[in-house]
Length: 123
Image (cartoon, rainbow, N blue to C red; front, side):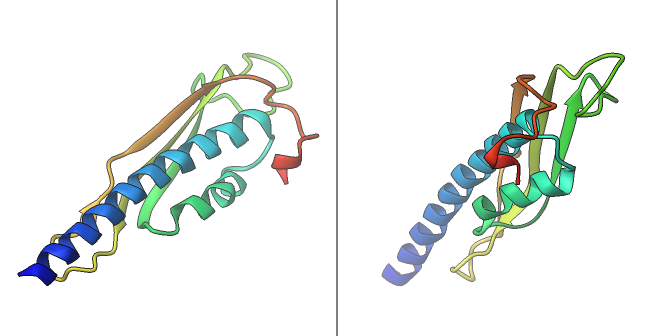
């Protein structure tokens, strides 16, 4: 009984840690997307170190207004970016618990300098 309770506490703690990590990953992705002129895959690479405790799932990067490109050289400029993580799960230690899925983590940041490539965080 004690071991079961201990494993449950460990899994719940790992799930809370993964929720915090997913939120931080979304913030990091949004920061990089707003400041750097990078592709979605490069933005996801910046987010990967935060997601070591979670598996599966998907990352979406959406520039606003819809259809805007990060380095728009004319027309309607981008006003911001939204980065979302959804469908991530945390591998469990306790075999008797269901798989723990993380809630969707979403971050929006308004435009700062979406054409800047002279930033150390952009590599």
